Image 1 (cartoon, helix red, strand yellow):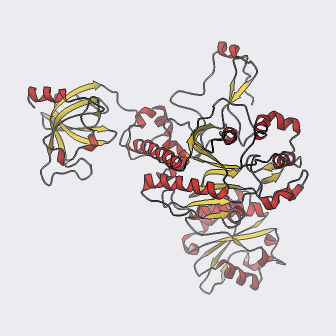
Image 2 (cartoon, helix red, strand yellow):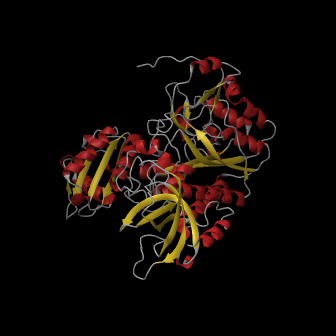
Image 3 (spheres, one colour):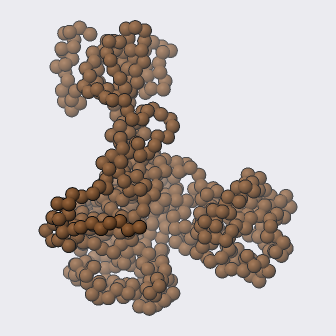
Length: 594
């Protein structure tokens, strides 16, 4: 490139691309003979003879090979600006691995914008890198292809979600982050008030109350991508702080909300996978529990739980003289699952609370081979193979005992044996007709399965009485969950807008008028000024993004997550607070308890 050509090119550097004319990954053979300026990081360096070196230059769009003079001391992750001419590679010399493999950038002028130390971990390692090390240097980790892909697709998903909500007439409203503490499913994160020592704000576990107030305020259809915080134990699908699509609408019921959210989910899936899911099936909560052992079933595979309790009425086998007997069948498992593996599965069942695991191999004539057959009648053995639909070579696994325990253990066992990889297929499912209350506590009070503003099923309202005992567990709520591949994406419900129904729910929960007024008084007061019928839903952006991208942990789709222990290796949070700040807030810390 001549000095005149370079000066003319420099004059063209303007506009939105700033210091560059093009992005690395956008160059193609059609750009041959063009002079371009690129900016990015040195991805790799390969020397060619004594005078030239090949530099792979990387930005967020991809990598392009640049041919530079050997005199340039360019190392991995140096930040550079390279100006050169795009040259089409000779036929047969293309690099089919690179999207830009049909061209090089030659006759390069290099400006080092910033030097860099050796990265704390290999940028192209195929081995798993220690997560704490990755999070400590997250700003480096984010340059890697995996994180670039995940974070940019997350933005695509959020954009698709917003567009889909606005297409359906929803208005984005921001709700506050400093609120009063409210009784929800997890512990609040709290913020001390400097101006009112001894009092605290809570960080929202969800915008639940405020979005209902938006309905009272006539917003009609509200949404936001809300940041929520819950002080609960972390795991693969849970962080202290998370993002959710939060929505509420007036003058609608369950089916309308399901329709709204199904459209949003389809839009997001199409934006990432290029597939628009057909109508999402629905399953009642009781069917999910009885057939899959969980309220968030992975329906990508069969192996459903089969009811066998009636078969063993009057049995002589003590192990089956219980409230419930269920089984699953592993096709071909008689050969594919050996005794050592059966022993491992048995130990798992014991850890989950079961006494053991009953198992039978199915022979060529449908005869059963297992240690418990000597305690079973011929009719029971024949009935077992028939009810299970067993074929020669199958493995039959049974659990007996308390119905709740049997469902839970077999549901876990089903996933342990048959669950496909997380990125294999997408199966959405709506689970509906959840129970209003999940249990009765030691005080005789029911424990709400969702929040206390969930409308009971119209056919079950008569059961809603204080001291109703076990009859309260018969009440179905107008609540619904969205499940994807065995992960709960989100929950919603039709809300109570009638004061008398709300009072009956509070009374059933054992809340006194004073407690109700203290915790929910401002909401109930708002309802007295004309609350429309309304319903809503919220689903996790982190979870949806992870599943659509085939990730097993939401930390891989969050820019700056916490570790499973709740720490932040990057900033070393949580940290102690200076004594003067504690004094300002009227606080003092106590020594840790053992």
